[in-house]
Image (cartoon, rainbow, N blue to C red; front, side, top):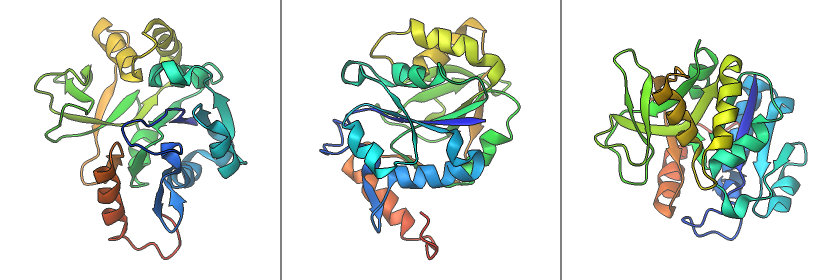
Length: 233
């Protein structure tokens, strides 16, 4: 199994001059530090691919041990094309996530133990900016986008594609628009019946995508409730 972290974006909504994944959470530990630490325990460090673009040198200097994939079109593409640059180099089950997501490490077990491709979700009321979803009676995703009306919750930005589904997914990532999110490719495949994408509810586990300053403050407040004596966040 491999992992991909999408860290190529410019993070314009967050308003930082550095790549958002390098935002400090606590004691100089960054979002990316936290993600790599948790993924390493599941995948091993040599199975983690980091897609970079905006100010890539800063990320690469912060993590010289990383395996990097460069999206040279980061300024005018979105997460679909960034993910494509990595998946074209992989032939395995893949967990991937946005580079601005903070999460409890136990969340990853939900994907590792899944027998199908899957999307982690949180059943809650969602705002306009969130990726919302609807599901079938069998628990599979059928709609997945910001435009979903009366969605049953939010996709949290951490997903699994099984090796058997990889070729179809890569093909659809190539087909979607330059500005599309990777969720567009997933939704196209689910609507066409080419992909069974299970919605896995994170339940009481904590997961938060950091889009705005208020999101960062919420994550930092959560971290302050944890026992972090070992330095891990």
